[in-house]
Length: 242
Image (cartoon, rainbow, N blue to C red; front, side, top):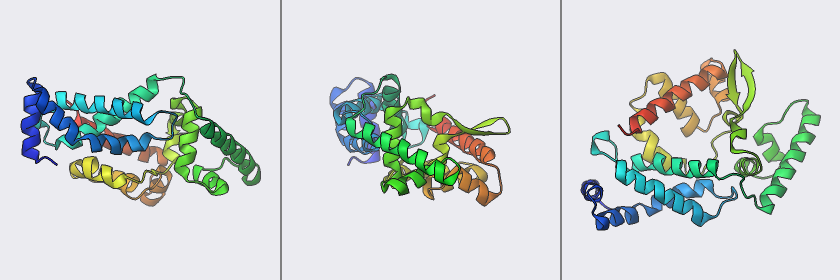
């Protein structure tokens, strides 16, 4: 691993056209790209394709980084890499879905129908996962693969005229939360107002849904959703290029 001072020096050289310096930074951060790509596996895309797209995001981060941002390069690079991958997945339609994912999505829909008949309401992701004896994130991956990307961003229900998203009913299930804790949230969390910071802590560090947070702090889910969006907007503004 390169020291922070060395990274800054190499970035400055790379931005001035030094190819060798750029290659050193790329090589030093390939594990970062790999760690992020792992979050997007099993969604109908080839690993190599996602890795190449993530590497493009890393190169853009090298070109746009400025020490005046006040964060480590890796902290700045993470949202750039994620954004590049998500942009690729959004634009690359229709998605080529593997047979196992199609079969799993079919089982999920059958389970949803069965549980809705038994319970008299639409089951949660976690109830379906328990019924099928699989991890919740596998269900999310299957549903994302066989439906348009925007489907998880559709309104699950409305309250006070505002949308509450299906995605917001799902707990964050990634196993590498500590990775993002260290690289993104931890450095900017202290800059957030108390209320926004607490909501982000409960969402990302305590693995709670918006509904659970609303119950714990005595607000509606819509209010929690607004607070979370404001907090994420503040984080994005902090990391944004000038």
